[in-house]
Length: 107
Length: 120
Image (cartoon, rainbow over the protein chains, first blue to last red):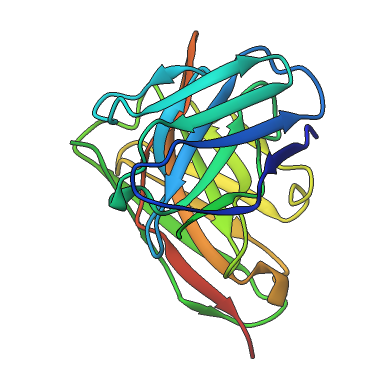
């Protein structure tokens, strides 16, 4: 199975900060990667698919980039509602595998 | 608006079979892949498997010997069975709809999740 490694596992940031989360795949996955946001007690929510396509209704402060093995999720200006845990997910092959998550906390 | 709702026992005894159903409303089950994903308390997400509306399945090799996913298109629902459960199977179980049409691959709709605890 493809291993997805996210970094950092957690970070503290302030409202308005630019935040970057990275995800590395153990083998090339083209651009078949998604990013999901999960708040406590809630199901994950799709933010980005195809490494860089913004899901309908998701604010434009979220963006994704990368291809092959290295990917990035960027929040350009962190808002109070963005404090959550973020997961990457490879859609290249089965079994689908998630990163371990990055918890974004308030500084 | 598509909605998914998991249902089933919240407590299962060790060695027994966990059974959950996901009811789909606001849209047809046809044309999509339907998945189960779980999350142990305080931990990350694990993909369990999917079923295509036609009945084709694919399971996580780590669970394959114990998992069965089935679909009932007449009721617009799909189900999960996980046999011989242990405490390690305690988790919130989510059902989700998967879009898999090039170049779009993602889970767009999720159930709210249901906590299943394995304990005697």
